[in-house]
Structures are given as C-alpha cells and as structure tokens.
Image 1 (tube, rainbow, N blue to C red):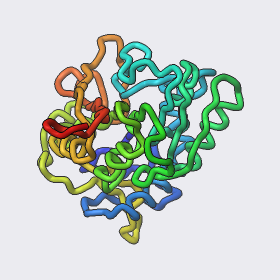
Image 2 (cartoon, rainbow, N blue to C red):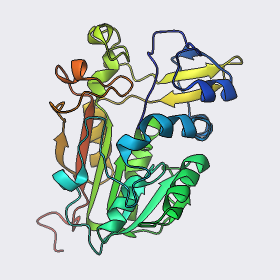
Image 3 (cartoon, one colour):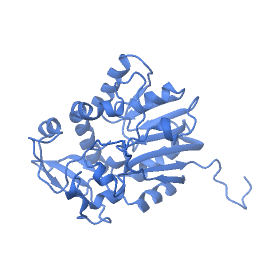
Image 4 (cartoon, rainbow, N blue to C red):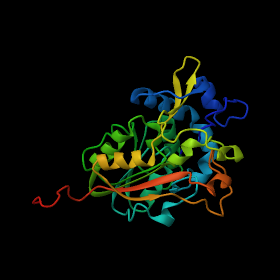
Length: 303
C-alpha cells in the first residue's frame, strides 16, 4: 500500500518515515512530470527495495506480515477479505496476487485452500515474505516481475487480486488490465484496490490541511520524487474513476462493483494520508471488482 509524503511540502529527513529510502536514493525534491514505463518501473523497484524495512516496521503488524497464516487487509480502512469475501470462494482456485509485497494476502489465501502465487517487482519485499514463511504457516510461490508484463500463460488463473499493489505505480495501467485479462480464465475475477482518485485533489496530509482541495482532479501528471540529477526515485500515477472503468472495459472485462470503504468507528490509526478525520468526510480507497466474461459472443452471433 502507498504511503507518500505531502505532495506540496519539501522533504524532511528528520521526520520522514521513509528516511532510509530517501537517503539511499538521494531523494531531494518533488516534481510533476510525465514518466514512461521503464523509468517508472525502475524507480518503483529501487524505492520498494530501499523502503522495505521501514515500511514493515511501520505497517507490518497492521497487515499481519508475521502472522503464521498472513492476513488479507484490502486497505488502510481495515477491510478484511475474511469479512467481505470480495474474491468469493477461493478454495481449490488458482489465484494471482499482483504487487504482493511480502505476500501476507497470498499466504492468507493459501491458508484457505487457494493455489496462490504472489508477484512483485521488489526483491527486498519478496525476501521479507520468504522470511515470514520460514517461520511457519502457509507458503506460496513468489515471482519477481513487474505487472505490465505478467510471466504467465494465457488463462492460468481463476482469480487475480491486488491490494494497492502495482496499479497506482505503473505508467501504463491499461497494459496491466490487459495482462490480467489475458491470464484469467473465462469467468475469472479481478479485484484491485487503489487510492481513491478524489484524493488526488487534496494534499497528502492526514490533518486539517488535507481537507482543502488544491490540485485539479483531471491532471493526470504523476507525483514524482527525484534525486539531485532529476532522476525519479518514487512515482505514483493518477487516473480518474472514469479512466479506471475505461481501462477495465477496454481489456474485455466487466465492472461488477466499485467499493468505497467508509472509515470504521473502531479504527483510530493514521496511515500516511489516511486518517479518521479525512475518512469521515471523503473516501480514501476505491476497490474495483471485475469479471472476465465466460463468452465474448454477442447476440445474434452463434456461440
């Protein structure tokens, strides 16, 4: 899941939760420039490799990374797959988690009878998953690759899922949708969670300052952090709700639902820009539930 800094504030190593990554990568400023797939993937791989330890120190317990069976938390609002069943019955199903990080979700699915596979472009994140599996519990195969070119045969999976993995960080999310559609079997399910697009117009601040709109919703220019030479070190891309729907449909998939989680009364935890204050006013997460049609035949064609 993402955890970016305020987009209109200077980086501060003293109070930055990502100080290790910023130091390793030489991050020195923020920009808004177009970034192609190759540069975006390179930045994301380096970022998550450098930030893996800090990320897990901050969020590992909430995500159940070291739980013997993992956990499947969809978003900072705390939606758990065990309570909401967005993927349906996973027992006996081939399931791909795209952008799995340290794979607590994939391991949780395996514990419920799924033949789960986790994919991520960060070797450090995957290594953290291997470490967790060595402690016992469910194990899953982990694949080191990016989401724009999935290294799997056509129609390999019954279900694909992503809890803030890959989709917000790739330059060509249309390609991700097409790749997921390719590896799904007819009737297969694809569910992915991303930052709610409405969040783009507000500063990434969990406090009162984060309640004032300051950026155009329709500006798709990505948020980019750069080093002293202007090389991207962190990239997060923006798509509107309509963009996401069009990408899904263009890939030959159907939109079944768009879930906008409300902030639960029991949760007083902040996660980057997510907070009880903001969560009570507007959504922080959008979860898209999609399906690959059983048949592409349309009447009056003979199927």
